[in-house]
Length: 154
Image 1 (cartoon, rainbow, N blue to C red):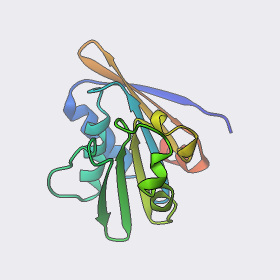
Image 2: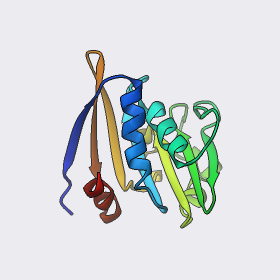
Image 3: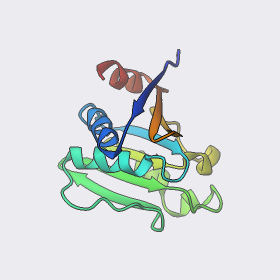
């Protein structure tokens, strides 16, 4: 599969939330999205925008200390993982990641996927955030046919 990379500049938190909303409107399970970038680069803001657009009302907590937060939207379950504090990729087995993300009604958002190593299933979409002055550059690519369809609709 040919992997095309797309880039956008996001200026301010509101731009990141709107960008996430565009993805959310096109997301259908099963789907896995990896979110990459330095601390504070916009990963959790993107996750919050996507989760709120899907229908969550209230605070979207960062799963930095719990490793995973779960949400339900009718027939859709969403798991938001933050692997920053993961010490060993084998810990993913202890939290049941494969069982959680392997279901047909699940959307998975995974921050810091590089810490999951080979234990982490492949992503349909990889979204990377990078600082550039006072804005962020977001780079996203599809790694599956489903991911390509989402990007084509943006």
